Length: 360
Image (tube, rainbow, N blue to C red; front, side, top):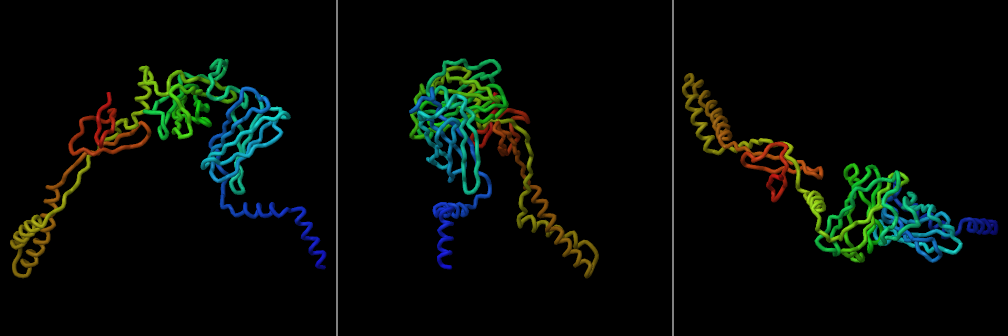
């Protein structure tokens, strides 16, 4: 009997190795109740799929997971390392046996606990590496259109400064940009139809210069258009650029949405109560006689106290004006004035030091 039990345990160990059992038991300790989130997936493309060239992948999503990439035509897979919270990176070296082409797809999987999220790369593996200027036409027939590609320059290109890029073109697409010296790409948000904005906080590891090449990209469906930023990242010349920067930087600008008059009633003092009480008692004393006169006197005094207090409150009532401003970013700001403000509803204003100034 003992021999049968030992043989049975040995057979279980053969089909279910101990490390696998431990791993599965550990996975069950996760308390994740939803699929992880993938915010972005991009690649540092290579010019040709020659053996020895490296494809550098970056995945952005939920932190604390494990990420991997499968490349169509590749003989091996790639495990990404979480270099920062929610940022996974890794490089695949192309081998002699690989059959990677410009049409090869790359699929990323992000696992957190027992849940997995997947996404497919929306850009080609073979192309112009970041930091080089493309010689191909900006837009082919039927491709989306880029009207302009601009930058809101920081004061200095140092760590901690924000670099904001603006792209205008065909609405309903996906826009991004790559900056020479920066790892990964900047994903834009379509803030208004056809207006895309993206920002990058400069890191210490970045190698950005004023003349760094910036490639913008707009993809709608299966077609895409590229553009190169034709100016320095610290260039302040150009009237049109200044207007765009001013519009972008005026985060405290808005329109007066309403002007409300607010009345604040003051508090009555003991003096008002005494005066009111005496006046009420005097009037009450003129009513009836005997016990009735006493009752009327007391009632009159009580009523006089209340009336005197209310009169004094009304005499002390003040009012102020609350100006409701709808900001360009969608927020609301309320500014208080003690006197009638010098503008009307619909006026364009700017909030500065808790006051409003008219914007021409």
